[in-house]
Image (tube, rainbow, N blue to C red; front, side):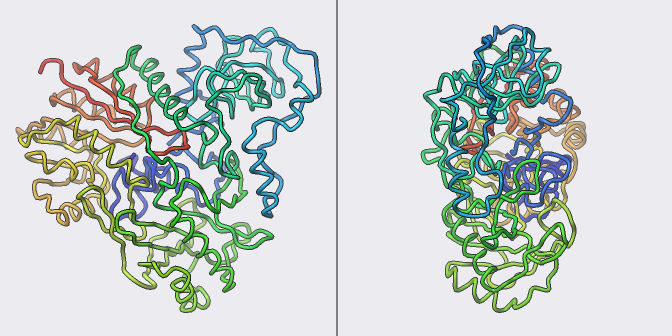
Length: 595
């Protein structure tokens, strides 16, 4: 995943030193300056107002609220016309009990969190065994009403981690349900082409269902599929990719390599960006629950590196002990808004940044002293000031309070310096696998000229540079271009050059002047390739086109255009960049048929 360009508001816009597409807190950039890979955790410190907080974090994924059918759902609706759904049979009554995910009432104590853990892991009401839910006896799906209960056989996993099935030939998206399960669900939304429902009872349980280890799973919104075994997660994500290519590219037989998963799919995130708040037990650090201003404490988050969790916990404790005022959005009172922690997997260096409404923090010297005592491994302490009431995390001003102005990190043999606002990939271990897949697809011999479009801070181009004759990167964000140049100089990649501009404009201009690219790499934002860029590629006719994408739907749609323009799809390599979430990254190789 990477930040975008042009739509590079999608994640890049905000701050950076090493802002690579694949560099960011994980999702292709999200609105407000977070990178695309910054998938469910970093792109949301400020409480959302009128829209969903996460894009299907990982970009535009969690859109249940609009009137239009979301990308993946269009495909399900289409399939509903041809697939025969499980038919709901009316059962004799029983009271209609709605499932409650966790203790949604307060979360103001550890006891409440323990209760939330039990409920969030179960997806079945406590009395489901004693009382069967009241089922809808409506003959047609069009007659369904909110509150009706239906029985559905789940066919596959949806792009938001929900179960997808069919009720009376209409696509049904059921929160918490898994493929191969038969579930009772309560209808929450009825549209012309699909139904949304919440699961209330499992009639037939999937062997892949497991207990989520996180006490706030299903509440904080950062993860969507912790309740699926890891092999089940990989299988479900592969199916998401197959369905996208079947629906949007007409490819029923997709040449897809096995998913590249993780040996240990926990503790992989190297960065946390958590909002601060006050509850009865004191200062908490966490994420806002979807569609709300309710802050959920995510202490000990199992997908974050233990060093990151430890640093967040100790920083929060120091702030509380010293009585540092925590910012309160409703009253516009207080100072410190957000804790940002980054851990260098390769360097072992630790960076803590406090984001505050102003720089008038009382007892600042004492705060720095206590943080250093609490975390002897600290490399850098910084203060960023963001006075605006905005969903953006960082403001424009950053001051180093103590230590180095950046930390060191590496991907393979590439070295980077990361300032507090720098973008960098959230899962370095999987990033190496993804970049190696790109190198395999490019099949470089040392003679090729490579174009790295939507290059961000140039990490993919720099990765390929030792194997190419020349690499040219194109990026629309000026700061990212400067970062790419600095990264190239730091790593001695003197056969690279980086240009500010739009790929769909620069590429035709270069071709007209006699430039010819043998391989073009593209890693666009979640919205996919600009149509003009696709036209430019078809006119340029590179032998190989390597497409890196975090959105299977837009990937398949764009590939259809390239297939129609004279390319063949050789293979697709999915990579699990964000285990426990529904997001999946793909590297696809397209080759000219007339080569």
